[in-house]
Image (tube, rainbow, N blue to C red):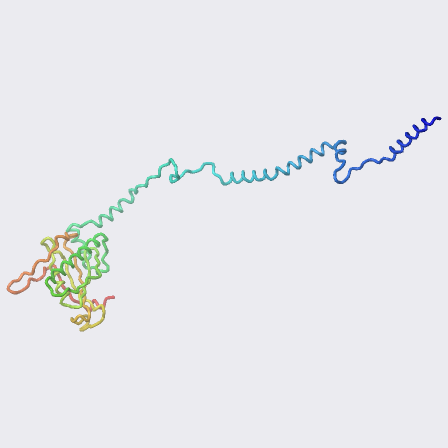
Length: 295
């Protein structure tokens, strides 16, 4: 055998030993060799499942958020938005206020009728009905009371000006507690001096409206000294300015709503040195004890 043939045999044996000593490659834990598994039987299906699982995880949060928004919209958002007339740019007009129903009108007319002036015959009937009623229990006609309270104030001002015209000192008469009901009014005159009350009360008793007597009834009651100082002989007070005298005047008008611009106080007529007495319709009463006993 030649040397060339021996060399060839040695190369063949060494190559066979190398091939037999080679071990199969095992895929490592870090993923090396994974390509060999994928290329094997069933590797393509497992890779597809892994990709869909990853995609599902990525889409889960957006899908849940969209579902929550949809449920909220379905529960809370109305199908149609109601337009208010007060909205800016609204085409709807503001509703007009409703008129009062016919049922409310008669009551309103009844209230206005109660405030209208009464005829002399109606006033006479009311006078007969309420003149015997205590003043505190007499019902109040609101419109009539306001109108005649202003008339009483004007009458007192005129009487003060007429009674003390030319007096050296300003009178200290004060009007207070004016109240009007249905046919009568009551007010109080106060002064430290009794003679001032007598003078102004006499002027009031003579007052007329358009030449006719103003009062249907004129009653005066002396009341106790409000201050309680200087009291002498029961309800009266000393006429020296230390206490206070008071007269409670209750009047009733001949007609409803006389013209206040026509009020006048006629001059006292002298007949052989005597003064003319007040009109017969006027009455004067003094009852201090009865007034003091009332609550």
